[in-house]
Image 1 (cartoon, rainbow, N blue to C red):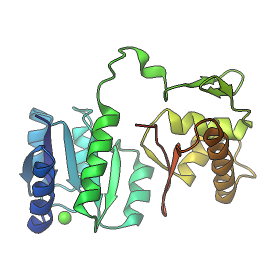
Image 2 (image 1 turned 30 degrees about the horizontal axis):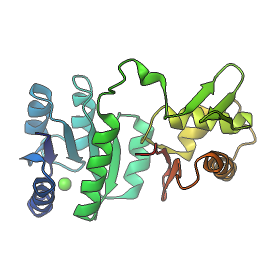
Image 3 (image 1 turned 60 degrees about the vertical axis):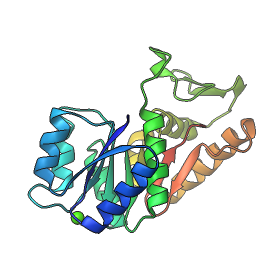
Image 4 (image 1 turned 90 degrees about the horizontal axis):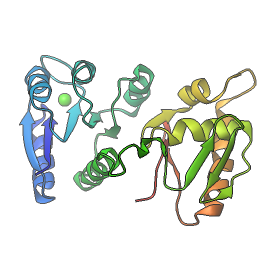
Length: 228
Ligand code: CA
């Protein structure tokens, strides 16, 4: 059975989340402070952890940082404010997703499912190099094809595709993309990133109509979303 640890000091929120997850078929375990949660997830990593940030004894950021020294299991952060997400992204602590409060429990369950699916061990063994089914990147010549169709990307678009597709589901802020996907950032504004993302989306969408590969995260940035 898939075991999910919930670390949340607000009992009302935790119990609603627990009800929904159990109803969805997951086994849950609840901790109200960071330290006991950390001890447990390091000793016996669950299949997924939902981790609040403001916690007694040890805050969620510290729990995440210390947990990552021992375990790579998926961790979804629960944050009270969207601004916190930006800060977290800057810290690059290795959370798998972020959910802002207040959230609907239904949406949270959907995110849990999506993260579990994405992080499930690949059945293809060594195929971890493939970013998405049918997507091939040639890093030397900055060429990419999707399902055999060349994408005709600009160098900027290729850079964005490289960064986003290699970290499925991870949310990148515009500032972070600027840092990772562009080797010279002199004339690149955040608005330019939006237009490069838009073009990239259009080119990918032309090959696979109906699937949007790049998810916009309101107020934060973008994430790669492989088809289910
Ligand atoms: Ca809290």
